Length: 399
Image (cartoon, rainbow, N blue to C red):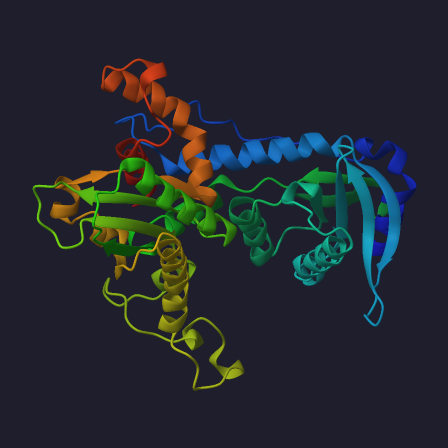
């Protein structure tokens, strides 16, 4: 059985494509994203529900898939030709790029080729959004790097993507069926545990004084703009402001706080020495025989990610004619500052990326629980932007 044979058979049977697809069996959704023990936010439950719901939504669209191209050359003038295995339209509203890999050895190329096709198509149709193109990968899904790439694409990149495992009997192409690949729940839990740790969230602070007192609307506007810039840069985190009470005589009573998940900080968890993270080099991650000895310290990448938060914060402050003092730490250190937590008024929190999506997935339950907890009617409870409600969520998210 060859990749070409699979491709041609799917194309020849494009009018009855649904008959080739096996009905997916999804894990059951959790009834609640709050832990049964203490009713706090459970990141594993929320992440699992989020991914399953997203996959279900994507699989529902496959029923409308109409193929219109087979072995389609994607070429621009003076460029090398690349060929998409199959092209289609899904849900009458989005293009679909289908890549077929038959073996474990070749499926590693799949993501590289899908990205190349996507880049070309987006160049043809400038301004395409994430929902305007769906990726479909048909491969054995045996390589861990491929499975992890799919999970990351679903969680962080938030691109519509589906994977099918081709199965057949006795090398008979007419028995070909496409079995939906559903991520293993254990892999999702490990993914969550590795990412969402307090030390992996970088905190950048911007503090300043002003001649007149800034009100809550002005401070919320500052953090909202910062969050929008973080979202545009693909930073998963949140932004908020706080202001020390007038009785507290601090030289810089106003602060903008930017918190971002540092992808290079999460990598440090792989290398430890007696629970103490040591300084190490990129060579510790890769085959040292294949790279130069004098390689940049891994610390430079971690700092580079932090600097992106710095540039966003300074840009926002400059637009409001604010010239702040800056500082940085991780979320673990930040939440253990007693002065900041007890002597300041905190304003709305604005989450971004996967943090925003997870928060939105549980906000109705949080609303009902905390309306009862604080004795406030639902309609009067400012649940979405409430700072301390959001902090309850973050406490359950991070470890």
